[in-house]
Image (cartoon, rainbow, N blue to C red; front, side, top):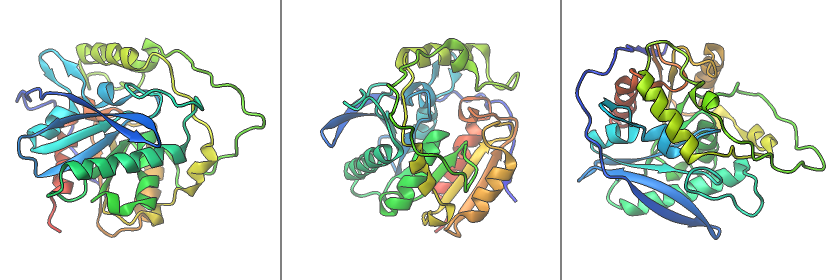
Length: 297
């Protein structure tokens, strides 16, 4: 059975804001933006990957005056080197000439970033990989194909039913939609009253629209058909909010049961929804992640 985490409000301890740096990793001639915050002498490193709509900074480094909502700051306070990648067409990373992103392209980019992060910390184990929502699918596919690039994988808000299949693209492909993002869409993951302050929601909406004014376009969704829980051979933490509408219990049960490594944990952040890491259950989320990374081997 999964562990169920208490969803109490933050314990009142302010988390200091760490300095944010921006790096560029060239992958097949294309610049990939990686944001980083690092403890002075980190004991481990972690790579964070955002989801379908919003990029790394609003998702993982949300700054709210008087509140601690940044996952990056919280992980730095735990002593880690923290990196957050913007996929192609998100945040600081431009679209490439195709104007589209595909699962296989995202996996290749993430693999290159994991290699780059490992090179920044040659005395440490390979980084932990944490993917949120659609980013958890990219993380899983990367783990299946490049298990040596990560020490363990954290699948957060996993949105897929194991075994689901997707049809090939239509022929001919339409042009990319390049749809404008909206404040309503930015706020829609915060569905539980009292789980986050209105100031926190407002700050996220502002940051999200500033970083990602245009929604990125994906194609080749049939490449997700390669996802197979049994092919994940890294230790795995499955974590999600109790009320997450994208992570129903039946799907999470099937995912957890099918994972291919015996070293695995399942944590539910009680009272949390799809954005549990930014809400009042954020400290419990960070605790679960750090506890899993630092478990006895």
